[in-house]
Image (cartoon, rainbow, N blue to C red; front, side, top):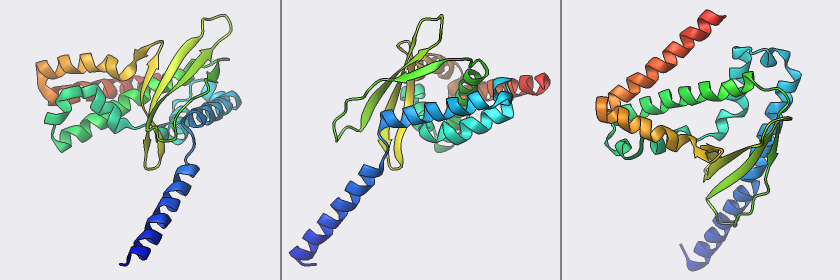
Length: 209
């Protein structure tokens, strides 16, 4: 390949990457669009407002989960023990932690009434790969609740890898609990604990129907 051909190839790749980057939704716009879309669905769907778990799960699966990096969230929550886990253990941890977080997140929809979410303007450099998107949940008669989304750029757009509510990191909050569990029962013990909690929660849901 001649120097000219290499130059042309390099420029072509640069342009292609530039176009792909330009098409990626900005992190604050992603949060804003997702929140507004989800709230719009909730306001119009009486079944979701009444706590229809099947519809809530479908909404979360379609509109929320694609924007989360559960593998990174799990890795951060497990901390230093992640390095010693086998590939099978890592996959099991991600699966069970994801199920637990989804179960926790869907509870938000069952208590939704007339909250509004304000997404703060984000200042970021063109080469930033990690950002914090700050939001405020407002509800008449209650104190505003700050919720921050830690996000990292991925091949298919920006992904959330942690959420802080009133300054408390959800992932870091689990890290201490997970560390104690692993020290006492090992990684398999933590997997079993998470699995048991998810199974028990599913059984309670089934009995409530």
